[in-house]
Image (cartoon, rainbow, N blue to C red; front, side, top):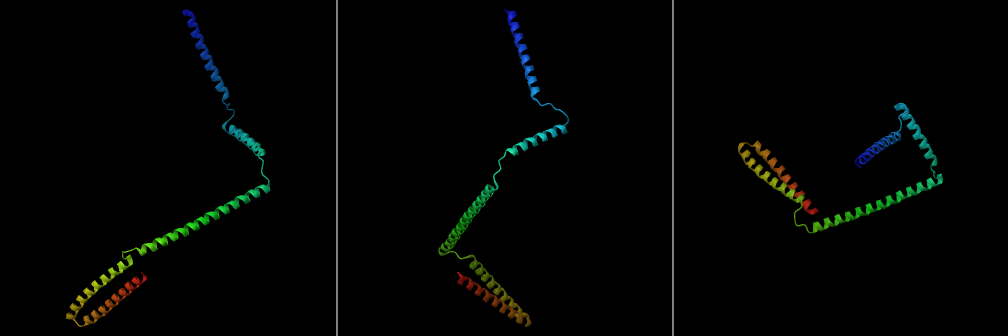
Amino acid sequence: MADTDKDILKAEKEAQKAAKKAKQERIKQSKPKKDGTFFSRTGNSVKKFWKDFTGTVKKIVWPARAQVLKSSAIVLASIVVVGLVIFGFDRGLNALFSLGEDLAENLGSAYSTTEPADEKSTSADEKTTSADEKTTGEDEKGSDAENTEGEETSSDETSSDEAEGENTDAVSEESSDEN
C-alpha cells in the first residue's frame, strides 16, 4: 500500500505541474502580440479609436434646431429670474442692516455718557495752547529786560498766541454745537 500512496502523490504533483503550464499558456494567449514597431502600433491604435469614435457619433440623436433654441431660451430666462431674486435679497438685506446700524448708533448716542473723541482732542489742544501761552509770557519778561526791540517782537507773539487761543475756542464751540 505504501507504493500506491507514492504513486498517488506523484500523479497529483504531475497534475499540478500540468495545471500550471496550462495557466501560463492561457496568460500568454491573452496578452496581445506586439506586431511591428512602436509607431505602427500607435498608428493602428489611433485608427481603431477614430473608427470607434465616428461609429459612436453616428449613433447620437441630435435635437432639432427649434428644440435647441427653445431650451436655450428657457435656460437664459431662468438665469435672469434667479439673478433678479438674488439682487432683490441683496438690496433688502443691505437696507435692513443699514436700518439696524442707524438704530444702534441712535440708541448708542442716546445712552452714551462718555465724551466723544473729538471733544477730548480739542480739550487737549486747549491745554497745550494754554501751556504755550505761559511759556511765551515768561519769554516776554526776559526779553523786556534785555532790549526794547524784543518788546515789539514779544507783543506780536502774544497777539498771535491769543489769536490761536481764540481759534481753538471757536473750534471747541463748533464741535459742542454739533453734538
